[in-house]
Image: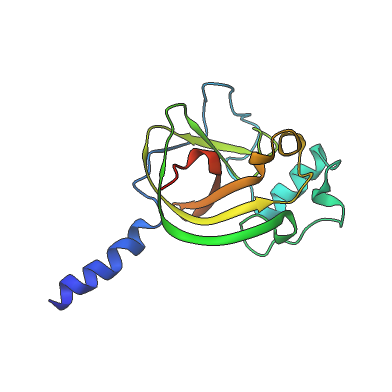
Length: 166
């Protein structure tokens, strides 16, 4: 009985990192090819530096370079963050793009891969980025709303529009 109870307690924790998720990292997407000169995954500090070299015209750097506390999006770039820590369903009839940071665009958010098909995903946080974070976020405000999830020890982001409502 104790073993069964322990298994029930541990099972959700081991699945919470989405190891069973059908997630295709890097490589060719239907829409564009990943620049092979870029590393497959940048640290938070590297991303902040890399993004500043391309787009410093938006609000992300108005108070200087943000501080990275972890490998997630810097707090200075987040308007709101809500802990979810539960399963949702991601619907990807057309492949759902996954980014290193919660910004729309292959370079703006740093394309990391894609998810295909409808499947369960364990969501970590719901995030809304600050206003004027980039051209897509200005033109299409729904690109300010994201979910973060963990996959094999790393944090990734997909737009909130990819997740089915309960």
